[in-house]
Image 1 (cartoon, rainbow, N blue to C red):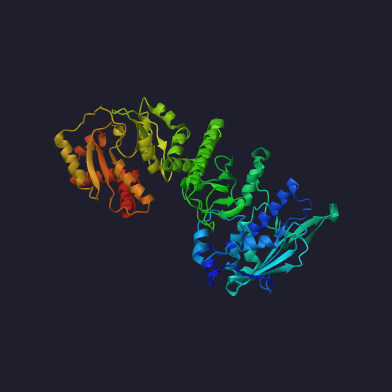
Image 2 (image 1 turned 30 degrees about the vertical axis):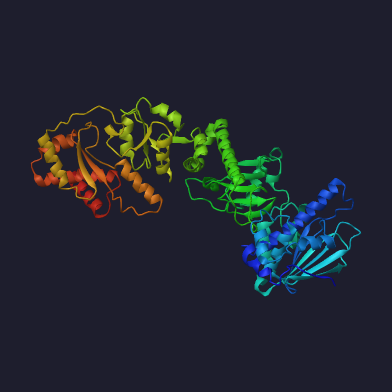
Length: 621
């Protein structure tokens, strides 16, 4: 019996393969099935060219588990190998040392269809491997190659009659988990779900309906358990697919998920090869990145669901499939390596998504607006994180006001130009992150002819700062950040009805009641129609606190700060308060005005709220 040695030196190469070459043991099945697919594809190619004139027959690949014999077998009816080819491909690791082996293969760019290298992943789970193979060349006899995990192998003739290859893994004791049908089926569905050749894993029971009318009955029958869909939607021409086909494929990828809002079919062959379908899911107001929702394939072989190196982070909010043989992978295909192709692919995907959104906006703006709740968080996130996407996004990013109307940024600047341009020629975008809580402030601003935006998204603090930097001449101001007459700063001034001495008395009265840290008392002449006492929160400090909270940081370094603004022109202050003779009643009156202001900002609770209610009842009496 002919013998050979895989390595010239006596050291054992296989523990090194296990330790260094592959990062994940379970990928052995992916590699071996991928090789079977490659062999099958080659025989189909030879047949189509006329170089193979025999019958192709059933090309289904079989994966079989024999728990009793402790074997896993992968069978194909592909191109097969001659003895010479077995020597060439299975023994191509025959070089001087393990060090050379690692140097040669550690940075291998792709092993899909690389029979020798992918084949050796078998030794991650097997103590012995048999390969029985017969070439499509009819005159060539079948060959048996056997290796028990040492550098030596045996090779002899075999009695296999039909074309193709059987790889038999004799599973080692530390890998018996792979002798469970459920484990193997799970791995096949993970890695081989969309391979281009049918993969069969035994039989399964299906319930079928037979007969008609009163004779209808359901019976259970055994059918082949085909694991994969060999012709997934992303490999088909977009022109051949209807909306229902895309939705059906989405359901195949993510069973029980809500239907997607839209999708983008990627198909490019220059300057790199890339196909795929990206779906826009129903996000609502949720910024949480939906990790592991985009699956990367290489020639329909699953590679990874960690695509952060080829897809900008904001695009990981999308779902779907990217398939590209041009993305460089290391030998385990678990980690991506950055290079120029990766950057080009990332840029291409970003461009296609931006173009799709721009087209949807242009084609049916009403529909686009109706989906803004789902689009908004994604578009804002994209504009924050990608400069090129931001440039395009400025054209279709929308702002929504408290009346429920939508505007692009340029449209809104034009809308408010006459009323909300300040003395520095800046467009003041007034907003509320909670119009219900800020209703009194919103109504006061509307009385002045101002328009108020709703900015209640979880990333709006960042987005507003971003627009202030990118959209020329824009400043965002929350409606409760200042008194209504100062939200849009003008040169106009309102005279106070109080003398300097009277203002001193009023301030002293409020200082006796406003003792909370961070509170500042400000006396200001406003319209008599404005509220007597307001609490405003300075825009800058509040934004800093909100952004810190979003990043999970402690807000202790920015203690709460607010202004207690007393309207010196309001009748309750300028007239009633100053005319009171009873000091105790004055103090109660000041406390009540202050409590009203706290209540208006949602800052009154617990015992203080109870006291306010009881005091209000006494006032009514």
